[in-house]
Length: 425
Length: 178
Image (cartoon, rainbow over all chains, first blue to last red; front, top):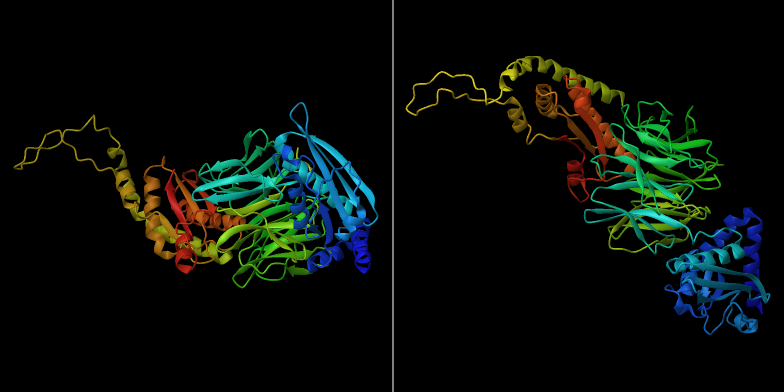
């Protein structure tokens, strides 16, 4: 009885956080402690074998990895058309229940349906159907996880989003695109030369990146679906650090064409190049604020590398980081409130976050070789590169650093992650 | 930064001064560019071996310089520094002579860093080193269009592994023919 009340509170609490964003921090704290993850039962979908991917297992893994849910044993046969025996599910200590079905349509597509119930209330929360290409079965499962996550937390889920990252295996460098869980990886570019700094266009359709394939660093833009690509910047010297403006119409870049490494902005079609800052120091790693009004960047104009910000069109720069002698790689959260960056402490490079409202900083990693943080589009997680067991790996972490998950395990070195937007096209 | 520039200017200026005496070396160059198909009659020498009267001994300064720089194509740097050290002055002089002797020659100056720190910031640090070498060459009369300073940051280490021994070998600028 007591347990039931507690569980009820758990689910109600999640729902109330949804209504009041101010509670979001609290919710993450709770999840971090690990004690009050919401228990969810996800039954294997009816005729799931018609799908090339294990739908229920993918949903379970997604929800578990968020740190907000605990997947509990869900035996038996159930579909979205069933009337669940809620008393039984309560006895199993489930707060929420998901069931569904898979059917093959005449045109070969999969009709995947599901329903989500509030077990404590004994009521349906949401039911949905989607018809997808068989190759998109994994995507369909991630979308169901997103729907469940959004209904139970109020935040948009990021399970159906994608990541891009770079792998190095021997002398082969690959720009890889994978689901946000690291599965379903596909190679967008394979090269004998290094690839760095991939940046996802806000449309989700293109990636900008730095390739050394011509014997020096040039910035290219590649259409993900068609593989069409073009050179955005191939000026004398080094071309690097592309960052899309939030409207996707232009990119900030670091170019050495006039000497030194300096910040420029260029239209996405390669026209309208203009310099936005003048210094005798290194200015690089530009990143736009979500409203597009400011650019954060790294400069060593004060000696060592520190993070600065200035109006996006250029203008007076203001120093942002003051702790430590080496602060680089800024990333701004989608709500504009938090900056993730890498700071050097002794000989270690560690992921840190700064509350941009108060200027308060928090080191959220104990590792030694953190690099390249990027926010999930819902702002709840940060993906970053690190090193474990002498190997380059990708990690995701909550903003408080309490829940860290290795993103994928491969034999290759993995680095330079960037998290795609909600939209795929 | 200012100190660095100053030091660099000093080195380059010194090198430039040294360069004056070498200008003469450039003078015979037009003779060397003559085609072997149109040789000049040469004086026969009285030796035991018969020598063709039309023999011409060719001295190709381009080839000589290329041979001289064969093992002088890497400049190493101190930690967190883009100062071209004094010990590399002869190397820089030699490359300047070679480039000045043949204005069609062009070099790619590839800056590199050790593995510590961010990829983009290291790319910029490598660029700074490459530009330091470019400046020391252009101050010796090398055309700006004959050198392109580029950077590989920490992406192309010469030596794998961590520790000062490996790092020192990776903090470098490679002078490569384009």
